[in-house]
Length: 267
Image (cartoon, rainbow, N blue to C red):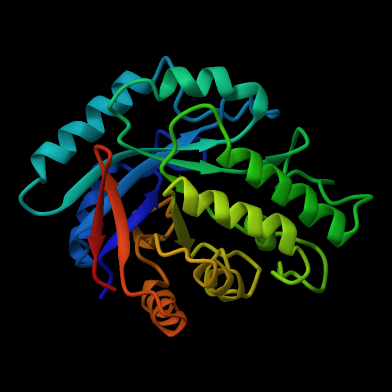
């Protein structure tokens, strides 16, 4: 049974039209105990895609906080934000994250070397190895940011869209970078999300089972299930398969975070 969806989007994100209330209702219908509303905030995005900004943050927080209070006897609603990492956006991110709310912050990489990974031509003139290496370097940077974060978002993101025949990021192939990413994640007590929005990757989740096993072997235990839903019908998608895979690897718990407190759930 799914317990939590720690990554969902609503109309505050540029790529979603969903009403936050509809997302909360869908989570209740699917038997979840926790849902995090984590709309995009992409300061300094090269294509002008920003999501929540310093201007819209107050109205966003007010609406999600109101739902948190209204539904407190039916489901735990976490007031979150997914901050897309860009070095030039760090100062804006600091301003967005200076207060208690948002209480749960996902750090994600959508752009590498100034280009959105979904942009036409992102992979042009790049070998598979070079593209993955540059992406993983950006992920490592996104963990070492000078502002508060709680989770590492959709590690393996470019597997969704890589044009190469071999779409899988393998630990043995990129061990130095991946080891550093996992060790920093563990040291900083960040949650590694198991994101079931996998695009054309063919994996059950991002990161894939291969990388989750490597994370576990290095001592990583903090994981959470995340649908990355942009509409309420996608909440908790693929969670049964993802949780079965986590159990096979050896994980015994899922984790969520509210107001700085780590909460342990079953799996």
